[in-house]
Image 1 (tube, rainbow, N blue to C red):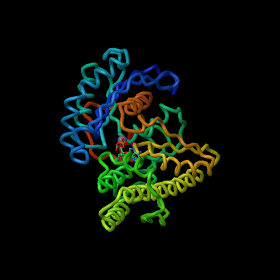
Image 2 (tube, rainbow, N blue to C red; image 1 turned 120 degrees about the vertical axis):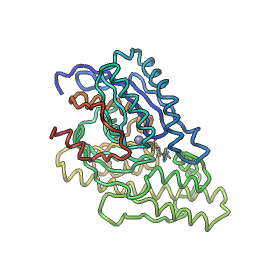
Image 3 (tube, rainbow, N blue to C red; image 1 turned 90 degrees about the vertical axis):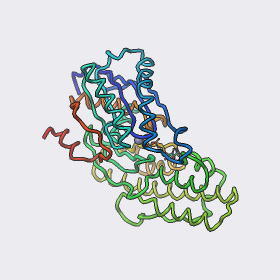
Image 4 (tube, helix red, strand yellow; image 1 turned 60 degrees about the horizontal axis):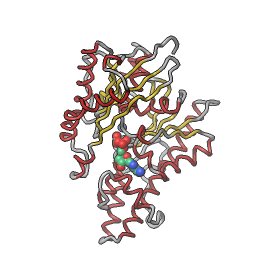
Length: 359
Ligand code: KG4
Ligand code: ZN
């Protein structure tokens, strides 16, 4: 984009169990800088329940959001009136939380008389690598979080194509469920990874559902059941059994993800001959070393660049929403205050295309 002025964007994220706000500045050349990025995790509130309780999440967002926004503004060294636009997650996510964030954003936008940008949470993840690494379009994104597991072709702002995803559990969710059945606590991913270091990844052979099929989809629920049956068969479990099950599970999902990444890179190379091949990873599971290794191998084989933004920006945060807002504002693609929160909102959606082409 040429002729764009610098823009200061406030981003608000409340779609799951993080209350987050951030101030991001996008300069004339399209370069982004994070001025503040405040995240309050609700882990403690939900820990006793072994998962996120939507009602509790919404209440905690109500209680904390104003403070988090005030802190983000203060840490950025600006005043509220300096903001050029307010961006907030409008979906997909837990509707109570999304409503809290979006309604607050609307109130701020109205009172400051600034534009509102209703951001698709997945679009936030998809564009983060442009903020952190200045990645150029097109690129491939693998989003692996507690709520989502999908390959998305990112052709431009608002121009996304879903190449495949999970037909049941998300990958982070599978880690969390395996951790729960091994009594490792919540969130499970980091616990499974830690204990897996002590285990034998080859002791158990777990199924790799769907892997024989060409499509770029995942299925993790059968795998989780196989892990449960194995654990039940061995009960009572020794510490070594637990470590071996965790290691074998992690190894199985790493192989599945690595295999699918190879196919996705092949497809990208065929669709964009001569174009540099880039794979961007987003979502909390990107923190897993074994998964990162499994993604690096096919990237090296294809001469592709693997881009993993800093983990604090791979997991849910306000900066990714502010940045998506900044990219959309630069295209003068803002929203009316009448826009509704959406519990479901696929990235490759009619609304996205309508917006992009102005039809
Ligand atoms: O992106 P994220 O912070 O939140 C959303 O789900 O939106 O991702 C959290 C998920 C959880 O399921 C967590 O268990 C998983 O990411 N996770 C991991 C690791 N760290 C976090 N999974 C595997 N290995 C890890 N080291
Ligand atoms: Zn997320």
